[in-house]
Length: 211
Image 1 (cartoon, rainbow, N blue to C red):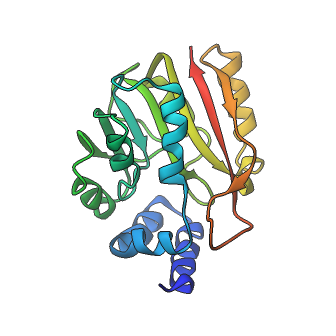
Image 2 (image 1 turned 180 degrees about the horizontal axis):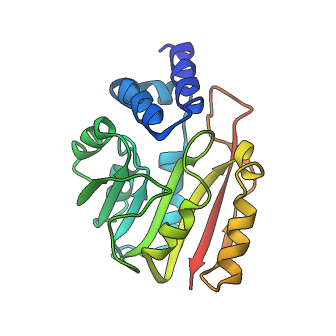
């Protein structure tokens, strides 16, 4: 497996300067995304299911995989007994692969940071990995994700270390807390998101209860 090729693909998505460029980069990467991220030891789509299982009882839903990509999290959640999972992504090519996994009840093309095509309080929880990272979704996208999550539900997501400060995540966290929209339930330590490659790449998982 070519780790250099995987790193080159990562560079192309991290340097995307517009949503269109990002979508094109993922379209080019879609076919080999799973094998190449596996070569780097990409943990997040599988590890996020631990936080989902800790906060959302089996049988409660629906859940939203926000920025689902090729849908790596869906089958893991299905194996754990979660049957009502929707996904959104900006890439048609990634969504096609996610749809082939038979783990998502619905898949929609949408851009995080813009309006989302679900009503207020629709989801029991949303989860998101590898989305709040370099050149990807803005912290402001959390407002809309919280809007479509029901009261008593959960927001479960990772943030890359390099964008936590520069992307203004703490300010958005505080804004939503001051507005009485959510409260912090759990925060992980910083940890590596690639078990094999890129030891410098760190993320933190946050879990908020929606109020």
